[in-house]
Image 1 (cartoon, rainbow, N blue to C red):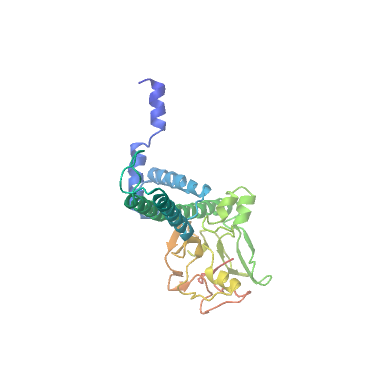
Image 2: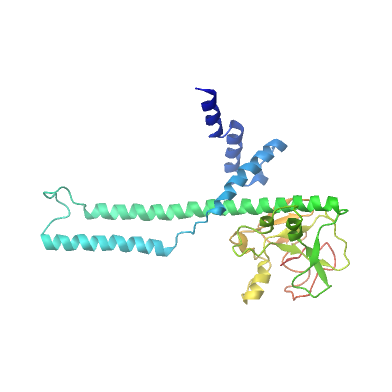
Length: 305
């Protein structure tokens, strides 16, 4: 084998180390946070592998629905009806051979249809799971990129991060982190400011900060900064009734939500509670909220959009 051919073969296959890390990712359910005893170099390799899976979002595939199954069954029935009409018209049996060769028998036709339907069902489930895992990984990667952007910005501005007036609140009452300033000044890419699971591109929910309360990156007590969209606010806007204490964001099929913290970590929350049962969808002590409400301390996590 020539040197050129050897180089081509190496580029077309995973290295042994990447293959080992990929096996570990599969065992962990594609959650890098569950990997233990991984050094810095291996962590970079894992993030590179996860970034490959997020490319699946560039080719969105709708999950198969009942219409596809009904269409398949309808085609099978039409084929059976046509075969039966030919049988009655020409007196040919679907079980016996003819002068032109063997005809497809009814049991064979039904078996083929059953295999097709089973394949469609299994394929839809597997594809849906893979796509959801890619969305989860893409969301975490976006939040990690925003964390790096906040850190770089804070280094240039005495520990502060960009803040803007809270969009839903009364003027001058409350503020929240502004990730769009990061992309505007090239601290990160604009595409990182939204979870790929939110089709409308509405961005992440942000920690609401009362006017006059100091807020700095790393200098502030560990608390949420950004997270998946607040379902209580979305439900309020659409008139839907939900329980805010068990409701999860719709960004991840209501299985949970990713949250970026001030120490740069990204944590998956299977329910909207942090610390001493502080609900990230509501201001502490309230069961609902009105525009203009804001936490009075930084110990109260409240993510809004």
